Amino acid sequence: MEDAKIKQLFSDFNPDISSNVRFMSALRSRMNSVEMVKLHTAERRRRSKIAVMLSALAGFAAGVLLTLLMPYVTAYLAEWHPHIPDMVSIFRIDLNISFVRAITDHLTILAWTLAGIITVLTTLKTYSLSMSLLRTEQRTK
Image 1: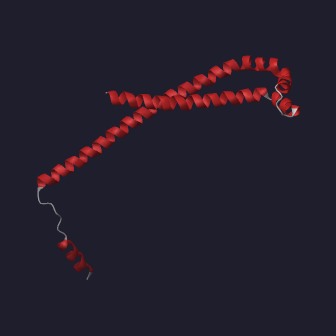
Image 2: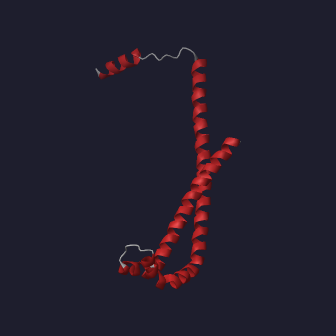
Image 3: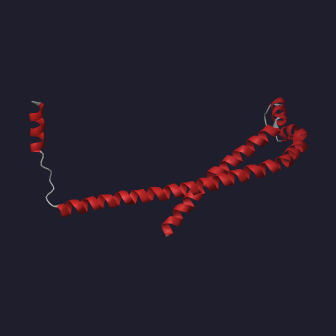
């Protein structure tokens, strides 16, 4: 019984392929579309790899530079450390002086945190800039 239903289903199947030429042209068109998508994907992957390498290099360079500058930054902050609570009171900023002293005691931690933020932002901005420049380069070709 099931065989009869399957035979009936296949006997009723009559695909609309009236011309081999039309079928082949449609197939070629679709294959060309697939090939174009493959090329576009490969180009995008290549651009992305280059952008990642450039941003990693820029982030590494920024991190090394800020690490090398950190002794000078901490020496500068240590020089200004005793004067910060006085500066806050001069500008009449309503902050608790003990809070200001607590912050100034941890200026080195704040400097390292700022260095990390600068490094991350440098990396992200380099990635977005290199992706946009690589996109522009592709359009000019």
